[in-house]
Image (cartoon, rainbow, N blue to C red; front, side, top):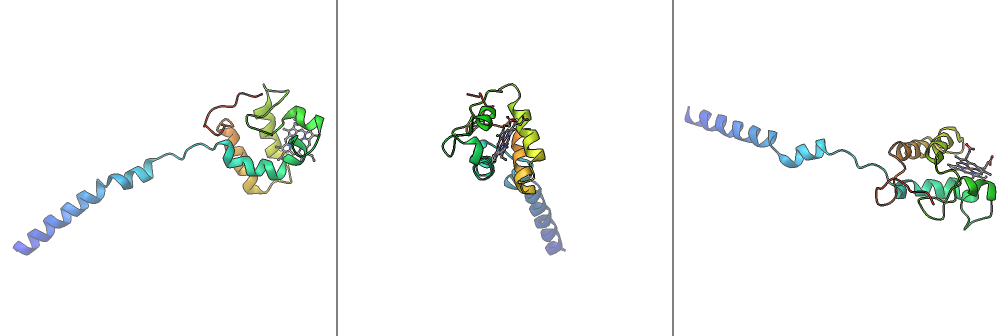
Length: 122
Ligand code: HEC
């Protein structure tokens, strides 16, 4: 009988410990940090730089929309660029589904820069 009681107490204690495990509850509750430009930079480098990066080539029409030598981009349309980029990611068939999803997730989060701040276009 004593043994059974001891086992019951031990069981209750370990259950208590399990429920109150702080590391485990943090792991479940922590929200994913929003995406920042370095997360999507490889997609821009691979899919957009050919026309939108002045270091690679001169393309005034493309680079008036955005020029990606550094982020926040240089642009002639600061008021609408985030929305224009979203449409660009939604409609461009050259993007893989994963690239599209990554870009749209970054844009939905506000197109944050490397410091996690909203872009102030150049
Ligand atoms: C082959 C060259 C080329 C590539 C690659 C390219 N663009 Fe462009 N893009 C252009 C040109 C040129 C314009 C300007 C078109 C105009 O003025 O009508 C443009 C315009 C845009 C616009 C503005 C469209 C509008 O609504 O008026 C967006 C947004 C855009 N590009 C996004 C992108 C993104 C994002 C990528 C990479 C995923 C990309 N582009 C890759 C050439 C390119």
